[in-house]
Image 1: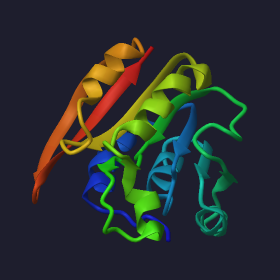
Image 2 (image 1 turned 60 degrees about the vertical axis):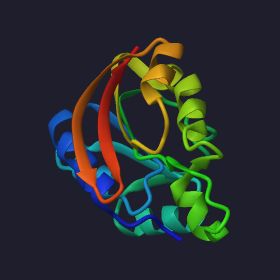
Image 3 (image 1 turned 90 degrees about the horizontal axis):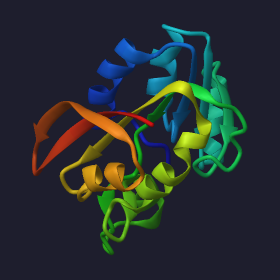
Length: 171
């Protein structure tokens, strides 16, 4: 299953249009909406996803793409890392094929925490991160502080039973 653009993707995309420059990594690329948007601003975009089928689809769309579990197959440094992670808490009723693209762990933030632990190693000295998450994810700002990121909330949008947030982070 490939994550298709939804409200979180569209909210993040608005900021990708503004901040994409230099060398860009779209982590957890899914359908490739962020990578394709970034390509309009810079020609140096790498899309990675844990799902080999998603990577095949990204390549069919003309993107440079690799299979990677977060940074496992990433070797370079980037000026911008875009991340629309799975960020919802585990729902035991959700089928496994969709849970892999929506569930960030038991509490919802575990994938984001794994990302934050390693992301700085993949940023240039002026590198930035755009990250989207939800009010259901937990206290991500506490995680940003724990891993010593400077951050600002760029936008918040209320949808159905949650609020979506886009954050801009730097080391």
